[in-house]
Image (cartoon, rainbow, N blue to C red):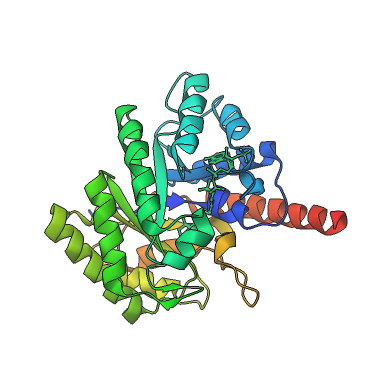
Length: 313
Ligand code: HMG
Ligand code: MG
């Protein structure tokens, strides 16, 4: 039986954080439910970050309270946390729910110093230091921890990233105790060749430092600026990676990776990712008809929020 690839749909988080408008909380909850109904194993539902930095997701607590009423069996809900305050928000949401509504938290670092400052107002070293108590407390509460590394191929401000810089941050996150590393090509700069170089360097470094030969502990998070994300998926599958992030309808982008010339690009769409998984002869858990419904909802919500934003400004 061919292996199954794990998909985390990050549209409610990466997708909605990059929209100028605010999607109402009840609509966000419907989007999470529609995505969970597609069969994806994991949904990144929101971020517990500063609402001053990302007002679009300032309703993380309220969203969790809505979702606590009907979390489906077998789906993992995750959320980003940049610091202990964010983790406190997750733990409080789980406490109010009376069960582990959020199963996993994502801490996020960068391979680029400039992006680290733009995204978190701190250097790479400071961010990693901040994560020590976050990871320790999260694990004590039985939460899984994913460690993101952004700008693995290039930074919107500094240009190309050296593969060893990505490998060093990924290894450090593994030293700190994350169960999973998520490698982000934040601005979709990778080609099969450049992305493949950084991925194989990082897989090798993780294996040497921690014997992480199980490639399902590494997730690949692509943005699809130049239409090359599918090529990068093929390279990652060849290198043994079996876990990918994607976004229904290709929503997404980090607002702090936008420059005056270029708005941060969307994630690889779940639809394109499925095509590559199927072409490789592997399996997934997603139902195409349910995915179409979720994509239609995502597109409608984004269109409504853009319309509301347009008439307000
Ligand atoms: P700061 O301003 O240096 O933090 O921001 P601070 O500690 O000085 O706090 C400032 C204010 O924020 C205070 O409020 C804090 O209480 C509050 P005030 O006293 O002024 O009223 N605050 C918080 N509120 C709620 N939840 C929190 C929290 N923390 C502080 N967790 C900070 C530092 C890290 C908080 C800020 O820079 C931040 O929130 N950054 C988040 C940026 C972000 O969400 N970026 C997008 C996600 S990463 C991404 O998209 C990349 C990825 O997709 C992978 C890829 O594509 O590569 C994952
Ligand atoms: Mg992203």
